[in-house]
Image (tube, rainbow, N blue to C red; front, side, top):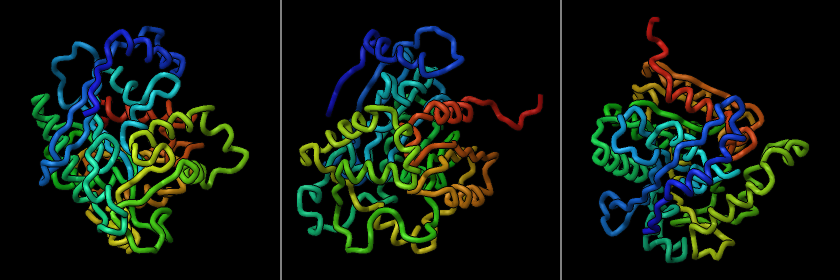
Length: 352
């Protein structure tokens, strides 16, 4: 367990940079935050552990489920180096917790701070893909149950990014009674053409990714004259250093990522059939997307949105001048404001 606690004073200093990033907000000091970590058993295999991180205002002893949020990552990178990366001194997780929220993240088995299964210590071709969407949804379910027990609540809010939208969507479709609201950031839906990851070769247990490949993928489809200003100076390097450090076997040069997601893409999303039906989601849902997303283009967000036919209400927000990774780009505060507008609002259908 990578245990640490962020003390109130150090958090206050680190988060002061948020004031300069949020035009129009009051110039009051952000509240000090407390950080907690936990390792919980992987469903069906107690020898493996899932990594959870929590942030909330210091001194918070209770919080309603309506103000609890759990985040899960996408196909390649762990949750903490995107959602809790202190860009310009403050992370997305910090910003939400500063609003009085109890914010959590989880790494699926084989990612980030969670246990690497034995298959990842062998050559990839020696074992089949693992950590597919069903297993990932079970991991999220374990995290949800842990949070509900710790906080004594019935429902919480869920947020997924990229493949994480399939994880959270599948979970919610089966457990609407445990979810307040759902945020889907860059949703996965049926592919029109070849998926950006995986190719057509046989899949082993995992794949390896370099920082050079990550940067090329990040900027794919962005016009050359826009690339220089898209990611503020030093942000990509900060993210890459933190991300590749989560897999010490790669020596900072390569990162291992489980291939269960790619097996599901071939079996379902690239084969023209959905793994689950969004019509089974019956909670308020936000889809947020960016116009330059080459990984999961806007036709996916529109297609998914059309299939959300039983939500009490739904919303689709398209951010300009952003990619699949807009949460860590120059327009990330727009992303933050749109997400919090959805999570914080009262019932938009209520009569005055």
